[in-house]
Image (tube, rainbow, N blue to C red):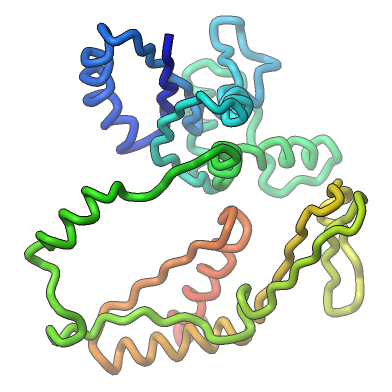
Length: 280
């Protein structure tokens, strides 16, 4: 029997599934196609990663690992709905709700002091950010719009779509031109298998090991980058001034890979530049 694995996620996609999935099952019921549900929601990921103190009735399989194994099969069909890139506040909110419902899940140690707390924080990192996408994109992932949909949109554009900027729109997209992640990116192809580690060196030269060991294969590509904070803040200041001058809405879009680390920091710098007069 052919099988489709449908992912259960959070928020609007979960609501859409409640409405659409029964319809899909009704259409496929007589075709010999089976539809399975895999829970990769934030709460599902938490429960799968912390089963130690759960009852047998509360435990759920680690669906993300199972889906990762499925991507290696040529006949696997996985319908992956949009999933949240969980932030720490979202994680803490989910933990609170689960604990209130009787699930014995440990609290997230935001500022770990002991080795046990540091190990616990590391385990929670598997739930934060875009934990799902790197696993499911291991397979043959097709994210393109079908040719018919694209052709229809080109032939019958939405009524709000007008020539730009001839229509008078002041909308534009600005980005850093140097000293950013793109500008500083470097990569290396491993000549042979080996281990690397990630270190943070502060201004005084003190070294803090962020990740002790990452094993790499021969021929594997390792990539690293960094950003100049002074250049980032200068860029923010210039764009805020330009938006005020032209009378346009200022919108900030941050999309660094695995956003759980970089984006909150870059967002914080934007807020502090925007409110610099008040903060000073």
